[in-house]
Amino acid sequence: MQRVPNAEFAPDLKKRLEELWGSPPNLYRALANHPALAAAWTEFARAIRYESRNPRELRELMILRGAQVMGSEYEWAQHLRMARKAGVREAQIAALPDWRNSAQFSEREKAALALAEAVTRADVSDAVYAEASKHFGHQDFVELALTAAFYAMVGRMLDAMRVQLEPDARDYAPRLPART
Image (tube, rainbow, N blue to C red; front, top):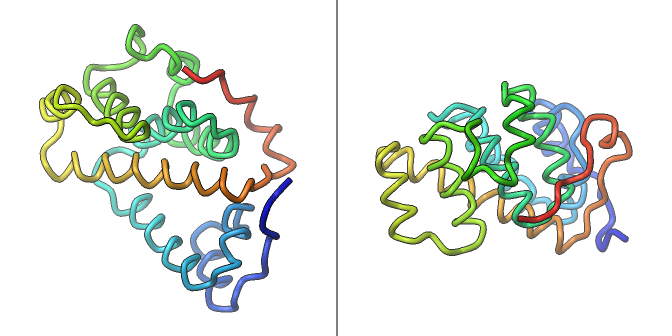
């Protein structure tokens, strides 16, 4: 059961959310219990989503992998739709639980997935950094690490508030694969 109610948005925030996302999902409705932080969250999420240099497809793969690691069904369902829209292939989605051994991913994608997994688990080793550095410069490393960290926070907030998945989510997202 959801721990905090879905709240109404302050008029300015409601307008901004509709400009950015259309109808805001339940996560934003739960965050609306604290209007100032919901507004800050919105702008931070917007910057990560729209002001990033790395391809959206790569970032969505990272977000999906983080959702798997955390067991975040809500994050998985929301971002599965976004990943498909961004061009992530179904074969890659299916291969995510065993990405290290899959031919579906390039070495660059594997470096990003390793970073996403390590950030989500709060254990970015020197080896993970070294591999990422072969494929990404400093700015891209910061961007990708920040993407993984932000979506780890998303998953933890979803869990803390026990945000309920939207009823139509099953129409576009099968259940989250088992944690790996």
